[in-house]
Length: 170
Image (cartoon, rainbow, N blue to C red; front, side, top):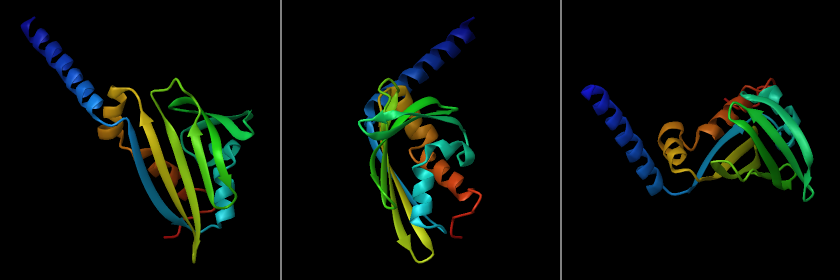
């Protein structure tokens, strides 16, 4: 019985430490990655701005429901292993730049992704910048030390790399 108490107490202390560290971490973060793809900026732009095609090439995306425009902007709900998340394209500059923001306000996280497309000799350089917000201190700890702030961007870029037309420059 004493061992069970020590184990339980240790687990509670660990959770408390994780939550305290989570409170000490900043709520906001910025992460950025870039890769060059052997595809035109228009081709990549079309993939990024056509959410209905996400289930075809993005791993983990089960379905996408297009929603009525939000203040004239493209809006959609993405269903994946992370649940359902509603997004809106805040900025759309054809072939150059897209800013996508999480529109749900009841999640433990939020923020935006900025996609910047730059033509280069062998295709297009894609830079994705995540300006994230993690509200829950436990999730903030996990996001920083377990999942990593780059995980979602890396997954997106790896999925794009596996896209059937193989757009990435080796």
